[in-house]
Image (cartoon, rainbow, N blue to C red; front, side, top):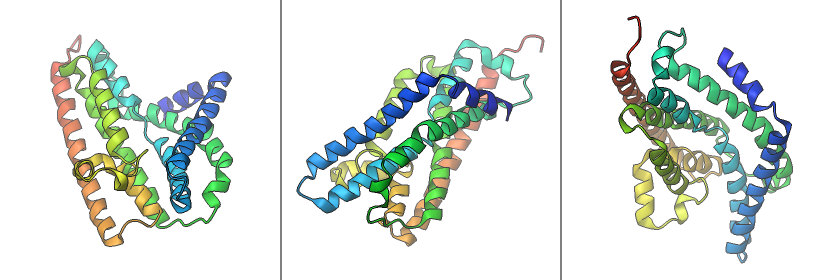
Length: 253
């Protein structure tokens, strides 16, 4: 956990950065809430639902760190990947520890303030369900997110520049994962596309579980599908890693 400790210290060393992170997170949620309150100004129940949805979705987003694509991609593209092969720690494990440190820092610097500031909205008429299933789905979602972006990082030896593809994935997740807009209010054809892709498991699935919108029989099926997606991306990562190894030239054998 050496890389985790160093990265965690680096994440919280700059006080002004911490302060602006706190302010930025609180303002982002506030702006989102104002938008939904305006759109549903004549529907008090929908305002209450979207208020909780927005706050919890913002907290869930802090469990997902996309920096692993850059950490791995830069090493693969520059050739530094070859020198990492002699380290006793696997490149993926090292990058994951760094991302995990960033997640912990985000939860402390951004997540906790958001929870404290918006706690009255979270506990007002609280109706939360399936908490264990929610935590499990977020943990599995973290794994899925990590594998998607690490796969993008390992693909740098083919794509060279991965930032356009990262932007594409970012925007696709933003639209089809249900993090900002619930999938239920999207047009039907967009909803069908979203349900065919794995991104809905990042936000929509845990939020539906939390707010009691998911049928538990269907939830077990969704967990099985989620595990299949994780296995698929895990296999793709292993294949891409092997291809990257073949491309690497290690000096001195």
